[in-house]
Image 1: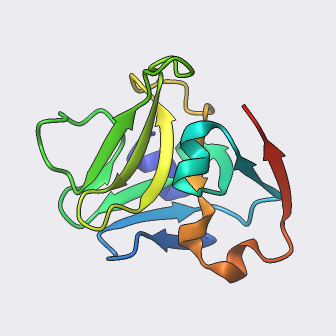
Image 2: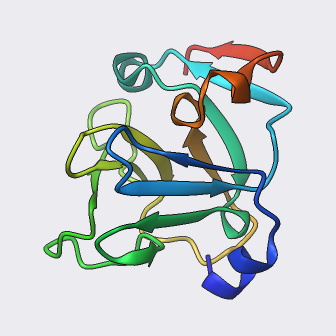
Length: 141
């Protein structure tokens, strides 16, 4: 995600983790959200909405705009878990606030350069009114 592409996209809502140190600018209300029930997402309790990565801006109070290519040894305010268990392929990072621990989003690792590739935003951080009336799909993969 280039910062210029993300800045050109209108922002419908800015969702934040519990402490407010990680924010995710979302371009529009989702048409549906996915309640993934794989072992990991079920444990997180996330409700995912999918957007092209170039339409979402992730910002931390520590590092400003982040895009997933940051050195993992540097604390950007967002940490990631790359799933490599028997069900994971090691190509997705689940990102959470390094202070309050709230899951905010996932995206591909290493960072995919295709700006139209999807990423997932945990809509639970956007507030209850953001998901009210939105169709919910339950997925077991």
